[in-house]
Structure formats: C-alpha cells, structure tokens
Length: 433
Ligand SMILES: Cc1ncc(COP(=O)(O)O)c(C=O)c1O
Image 1 (tube, rainbow, N blue to C red):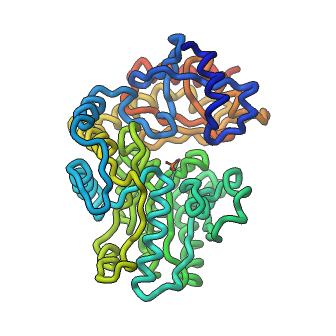
Image 2 (tube, rainbow, N blue to C red; image 1 turned 90 degrees about the horizontal axis):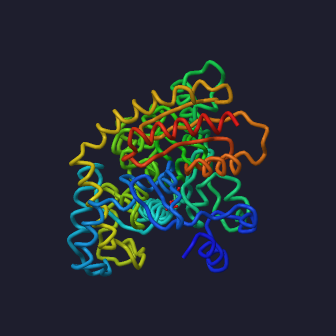
Image 3 (cartoon, rainbow, N blue to C red; image 1 turned 135 degrees about the horizontal axis):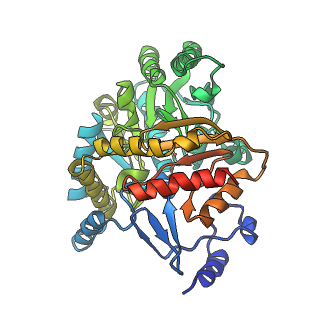
C-alpha cells in the first residue's frame, strides 16, 4: 500500500467527518500508517507531529506501550459484555476511581462526547420530572458553546456553522453571554468581565428558573469557539446562582478534563462541584471511544424506585465497554505513576519560554495559555487562512488545525524538548510566510 492508493480508496469508500468532501479535490487527505508517541507516520515514512492530539483525545502518545500492554491483557480476558444486567471488573474499578477523582458518583457510560451530553440533559430533565417539577424543560448554555452534534447536544451548542442548517430539527435553548475574555471591553479584567457575564446569567435565572432544568458549560475553555478562555470566578458564581435558583449545573469536561487545563478537572480551579460532569476524549488516552456522566447521590436517589419508568432507561450497546474501560484505567495509572499534573506544569513553563517569539510576533493577538493548551489569533486578510495554515504546517511535518484565524496547540503530554522546539520554530516560520 502506498499513500496514493489509500487516498483514492478512502475518498471512494469513506465519508469523512466535518468535511465538504469536494474540498478534497484540491486538499489531499493525509494517509496514516502508524503512530509513535507524538508522531503520525504516513505510508512513505513522512512524519507529522500531532500538535492537536488527534482532535484533543490523545494524552500519552500514539501506540503507548503501557496502554497497549493493558489492552492486550484485557483482550484475552473479556472484550465486551452488555452492561444491563451484567457487570465486569474494569467498569467497576474505573467508576470507583473516577468517583474519587471527581467527588461525584453513579457513573453512567456512553460511547462518545455527544452521547454524554445527551445523557446529562436527559437525566437533568428526568430528575426534575421525578421531583414533581415537569415544567423544568429548558436548558441554558453559553454563547459560542460546543457540546456535540447529535440533535440534543446540538440544541445547546452555539456554533452557527454546525447548527444553522439543522435549526428546524432542534429544541430551543437559551444562550447567555460568554465569559471568554476576548469579548471583554478594553481595559476590563478577565475577572471583572466574567462577573459581569455572571450578572447576565443571574438576570436570566431570576426570570426563568421555574422552567429551567440546567445550565451546561465548558469549564474554563470554550474549545470549538477557538480556545476561548475565561476566569474561574464565572464558574464559582454560576454554581452559587444554580444553587440559589434550583437549576442543575452540568460541567462538560469532555475536552478540558484529564489535565488539559493544568488540574485533573477544570472545575477544581473554581473550587466547585457540578451536579453532572461529562467526560470523554482523553479518558482512554485517545485509544477507544468512551464517555461517562457522573452525578450526585441526590440525583441518583430521585430515580431509585419501584416504578420502572422513574429509572433512567437510556442505553447504548457499547455502554461501559471493557476494553475502553481498561484503556481508561491504564491512562489513570500513568497520571498517578508519572505525577503527570506536576510534570505538565514544568513542561508548560518550558514550552511557554520557547513560544516567546510567537507571543511577541506582530501578527499575533490574544496569546493565551492554560495548562496544556496554547492559542492565539493571527491578523490576516486571507479568507482561507485556516486551510492555508494547515497546509503550510503539514509541509513542515506539523499537524495544526486552526479554527478560523485562531491557531492553537493542544499536544499530547509526552511532547519532548526537541519536539517543543520544532513546534515553536515551525509556528514562527509559518507566521513569517
Ligand atoms: C466540550 C465538548 N463537548 C462535547 C464534544 C463532543 O464530543 P464527541 O465529538 O466525542 O461527540 C466535544 C468535541 O469536541 C467538545 O469539545
């Protein structure tokens, strides 16, 4: 097999995600034969540094020996069994460990991020219905939010490109102002702006709390909005307001969980506990599709009943897949054994230093960094900036995929010193074109 053969077969047989397929008449697919640490390698040996962790999922590199070993061991024991009426060791262990880490429990599994969003929304509504408040049917999300693209998740997403076409199929939801500090007034601090946005949330809740089931947020970083970052004061205030007005707080940590923002979970930085936390992406180290929603004892208790329909009758065939759970356990082991959160702090400081010329570049605006996420806007008149930047990066052996004119780096945590230098130099080189 060579690059061209697989490209043509892929274009004939595969409908690729998030893509106008006609664009591939001029933009070639990148065929990948194997992965190795932060590198993806094509059929002719060309290497690409995966600086976006393959859509933000990979934490410890491709073909990680420790996750591989765990999966090989699990393969010989049990690949999968349905989770209705049955259980198995990896799912029990994973649920216990996630409960310890999040302070929430009763882990309910799905297969991908969007299904976790669906689960949290349905559970919240059903909780209120079981609690004699069936009128609580509405959801609030932040402006520019992204929570996935199945119909329920898309209803609380606020990205026009993905949403507008399907508007006739979606439920109405309300968007409150986003605390993303890029939207602050000149001279207004990120904290002051976050608190001003919290006031807008309060005004909405004052009027509509009786019919509102939940507020769903991406804690600290709105990824698909172009890595919009905000001050934790917003989350703290949102938690207080949700408590005051009897509305659930759903933390969608699908993208930011598992160390991305510098703590295991982003909510920790605001010192809050949500009513529901949605996890996916990095949960398996980027190996297998798995998502989970954890919630409170109070929510769980409202479903626990003799009446079948008061239970949460939601299911996916691959709920709690044993292989995926085992990959997740191996991932948590690496966090512990390598003291990853601490190690990332040092790595981030090092990379920041190397990125000084990027931050100071005359075309760069809003350079920002949180944990293992870096982002900035690029001043440009190029309407095809994202595509052209992506192609220029590929030519340098870098996988970077801007969102509009926002360039971001969200690398696997195993990024080495030499690779950081390569990435920083590549960014400057592309900016100078
Ligand atoms: C915050 C957030 N929520 C939900 C999702 C949806 O996850 P999935 O693509 O696995 O359905 C994403 C995906 O990027 C995300 O960033």
